Length: 256
Ligand code: PTJ
Image (cartoon, rainbow, N blue to C red; front, top):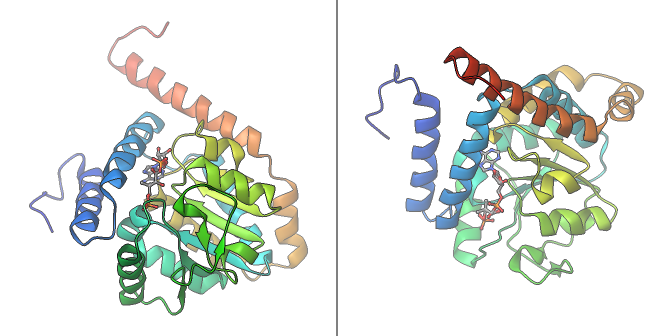
């Protein structure tokens, strides 16, 4: 894919960029998706490019919700399709959730390409091309499948814009988001807000599912009952502040 040497100090970040650019070249990712990735990178840098403990707590709560759901759906857009196709397929397989392509910059061609891309990475059924229902929204993210997002009780919406998240919550659904901006409308609206890079979060969620899947329904419910989303968002903000402060102080810059 690239000539980026493995010992480059920013190897992971640069490889992620390459994947997004390749997604655009393949017609999977929108050009706007490049801008969104850049914003995510900036927040990740401030976070310290690691999964903080409160994000891991949110990831476990998200897994508990998905495992207890009747009809869980993982929504896939052009960014996640390009960055983490294997992890999306693994998470769907291991939890029993179904994948649905749902796009902001929607075209039939992109829905088809993302669907085929997921299938090439091992996905079975991929919803989203029927588009036989509309959420009450003025843009194309409104177009959903009736037996998918429309009737889901739990929806995972990584890298989302706030409108649909809010609408899904208003419809009574449990909404899980993965968003590196802890203050985005999506982050502030979702039931479970995972402030982590989607590239780390999905790997963690696959691992947590393996750990938690054998547990009783009561133990999963206990994880949900103990969960406090406001606290998770607050901790993400605190962690960002601490990371910046430590970085500044390492360089002898006074934090005022
Ligand atoms: O493929 P489409 O047409 O559905 O469009 C997808 C994008 C992402 C372009 C669209 O949903 C969009 O414009 O999203 P926003 O409003 O830019 O929101 C994306 C959010 O995800 C922002 O808060 C970013 O900080 C965050 N983000 C970006 N990259 C990552 C991320 N969060 C986690 N991991 C990332 N890699």
